Picture (cartoon, rainbow, N blue to C red):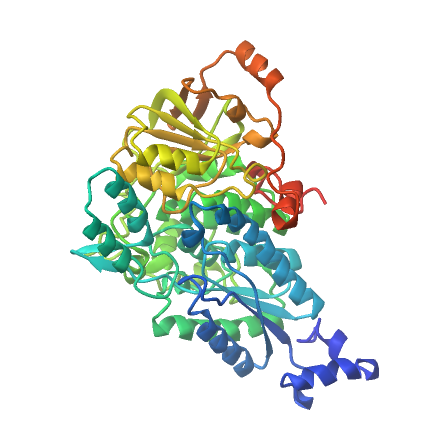
Length: 560
């Protein structure tokens, strides 16, 4: 098969003279029209530190593609800074941006008949957005992570942006003075790169490495280190070779490779958002995957890495300890990874891990040995019950008391809840309910990092539960349950909860239960009316009409 198997439609023949004329204007010469045209989808922006170093990486990717005999074509896609929009109306656009990114990459690549695509992303939704597009189009593709931020430092502590969120709660509870709050703000984010703990960005980059769609070791590199730029240039060369070998995303993104990714997510203590994003990626790749499959993986894979938000270390520490390949080699040796899965290099997972040590360095504590895990089973569990008949997602790492039954404190928005926490109106034993924040009701399923961090900062993390039909940041920990489905806006039971109702969260029994009789619930349901749409124009209005349940990945192309 010709290397320019797709792009030849716009470069060959007399009738394509105008097409070639335009390509000459952007740098093509006579000898270039037979080369594969490779898209470089850059999420560069100065909106967020996560993405501000990507322009340099895009240039290195172009250099790698040219050196390998391809013709790069650079184009941009968007990003939303979750950390900056957090706690505001703007956060409703965060999950929406995942689908906008996917649609924009698909649009550019297919409109221009590109032979392959290298996507570079930093902030949380760049990664699943790019992978959804790659799985849809099924043209040779590789993902390059923009890199993690290095930790901030203050008074002997490693800081991340979550440190700043938690400081707000500590200050509001009278446990921190204003000077300390100010100092943490100044030191939490020292430069370029995505949030430094095992939050959503680093979770998804690690999972893509495990799945074989990114180069090994690349997912934990710091954005500002030279090895990240070198790895990006190598990725461009590897992609051109994949085009020659006709290695496509759906050769790599299989049921077995997704299981590998989920196993690594459990082992590293990754974000709850991985559940939402991998359901969507699997849907795009036409790979069967359900929310219950996450529970199956959880029960067999231990948590091996002691990483923030609930642990001690940051992602650069994980990189120094051997990175994702070290974790993968341990899982492979334990029979918890499929070694025969293909990677973008053309080698299998087992072949790529051949030279990785069987055990981590005993002089570090970031990666625990299998016989001494942080937790014996995975940390992301799927709860069900009358409050979540389709399922909900809980994160158990850092939770001292995995069961709570307490009175409901009901809020119909994140803002109302945060105000109550900061003003001291939440008591130990309460179960907070934040609803009408789901994919349809929000719309956009906002992350609840501001209220959950305020709870931790106020010292209530071990004594208060929180459930929501919205999402949580990868930086969240505590007795919190998100992705409750069906959501309130479509008449899920969470819409029927009243102040003071007793709610049980029992992670050990995987139960999320409203302790109200069926007769009473039926009476409440008969009175319930769906709220009017919050948006009637623009992207959020379109999203509301198209988006599926969170239990299906909140995808926007399931019903069209």
